[in-house]
Amino acid sequence: MKNLYVGNLPHSTTEPELRGLFEAHGAVERVSIVTDRETGRARGFAFVEMTNPSEADKAVAALNGTDLGGRALKINEAKPKTDAPRGGGAGGGKRFGGGGGGSRDDYQGHARQPREPRW
Image (cartoon, rainbow, N blue to C red; front, side):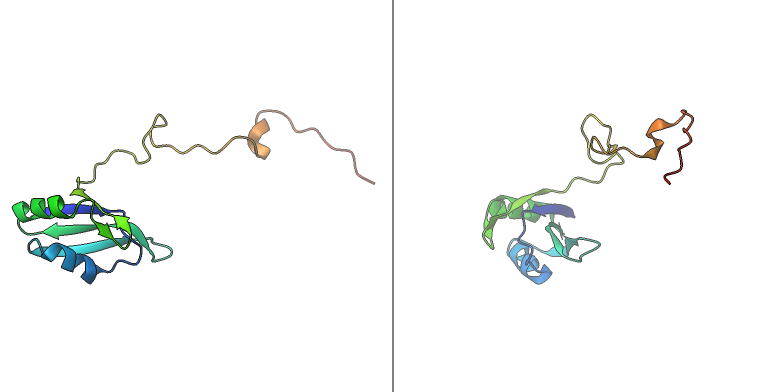
């Protein structure tokens, strides 16, 4: 069993269409097109699980870079998910808000000055 990542998919790609593409190179166990949780729209990539690892390698060699719906497919062996934080970079995966803005809590620790009535 080998799991393949298929990237740069047209958003209109269907599971049967993708299955047919890969079945030309061997037995396909499962096809899952990744969709956006909120909109339900395809996110442009999928995973194809093939029964025979050597057939999967042949499919990668044959289909990687081929055109589907005007887009060049990016196909490689799927890497298992790691527990590392997402959104790498120097921030350790933490997201920091943009500059400026600020909020009322910016002056924590300072006594709030009473205001004069406006009338």
